Length: 117
Image 1 (cartoon, rainbow, N blue to C red):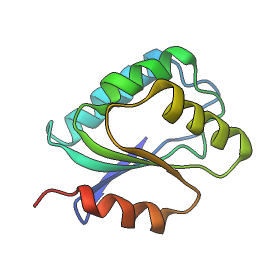
Image 2: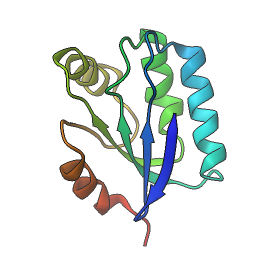
Image 3: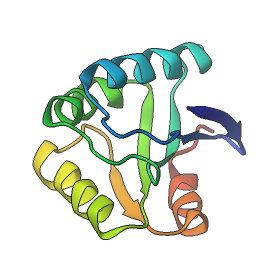
């Protein structure tokens, strides 16, 4: 997972993963919280390289993955990832505003309204 903060927005890019399960989700959330020093940010999440996200991981991320996140923009490209992202947004119902995008720039523009100050 690659992370950086640019213009008040946290960018998270996942590496290629065949199976994103709850254990991986817990590690990623803990790493993110450490990276941000437990500060809150709007977050652009690129899941393009994730092949499968388990139900347990989705449930975990919908609750605990929202801690320290003011809004989530999920970047997807494939039809399968679009389906997974829609399912996550509509069924798992994350605790923070969450939208799916196919391109980064519109996602960043949407996230700007959730920045601090």
